[in-house]
Length: 335
Image (cartoon, rainbow, N blue to C red; front, side, top):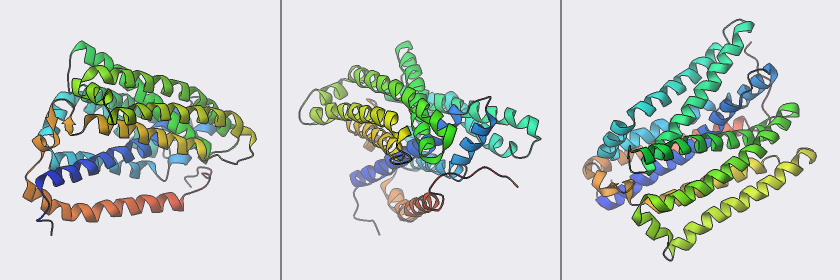
C-alpha cells in the first residue's frame, strides 16, 4: 500500500507523528498535571471542584504519551535506547508520579472522609513529581543527552520551567471550567504563572543559542533566523495580551473565559514550533539525525497501515470526549 514511500519520507512522517503526539500530550496532559500541582492542601471544596474539572479527561490524555513512546520505539529504536539509557532514573520517577496520580484519583473516592485529604495530597505531589521529571528529561534531551554539571543545571531550570508552564495552562483551564471563588483563585494563579512563564521563555531562548553551533547558526541566519526570533516575540505579545485579559475578565460576567486557555495553547504551539525548527533533522539534538535512527523501511511501511487507522481514531475519540463534557464542570459526586 505504501511501497512507493521513500525511507526519507517515512522518517519525516514518523517524526511528524512523534512530534504531534508529544505536542498533544504537553497540552492535554499538561493542563491536568497543572491542575494537580495547583491543588490547595487546606481547601476541600476547591480540591473537589479541581478534580471534577479534569475528571472526564485526565486518564485519556495520557494516551498521547503512550503513543509517543511507542512511535519512538518502533520508528527510532536506536534513539529510544540511548534516550532511556541516559534518562532511566527520571523516567522512573515520572512513571512513579503517574502511578501515584492514578491510585490517588481512585482511592480518594473510596476512603473515609477524614482520609480523603491524604489522597488529594498524593495526587498533588504525584503531579508535581511528574512535571519536574518531565522538565528535567526535556532539559537533558535538549543538551544532546549530556550529563555534565552544566547540562544538569540546565535540566533543573527546565524542570521548574515546565512545571510553571503546566501550572499556567492548568490555571487557564480552571478559569474556563470553574466558577465563583475557585475561578477567582485561578485568575490569581494564572497572573503569577504568566510572569514565571515569560521569564522561562526568555531564559530558554537565550540558552538555546549556546547549546549547539548549528542551532545558533540557524537562529542567526536568514531566513529561518527571522522566523525563530519572531516566535518568542509573538509569545511575549500573547502573554502581554493574556495579562491584560486576566485583569479585565473577572468583571466581564463570564464573557471571554476561553481566551486565556486559547492563548496558552498558542504559546505552547509556538514554543514547540521553534523547538522543531531549531533541531530538525536531529532526533537527538546534535548527536543523531532522524535518518541515522530510522528503523527498517519495509517494517515502517507495514506499520504505517495501522498508524493511519489508529491515530485518526484517537483524535476522533479525544474530540468527542471534549465535546460531550464541554461547558462548566459539575459538582463532584461519587454516589
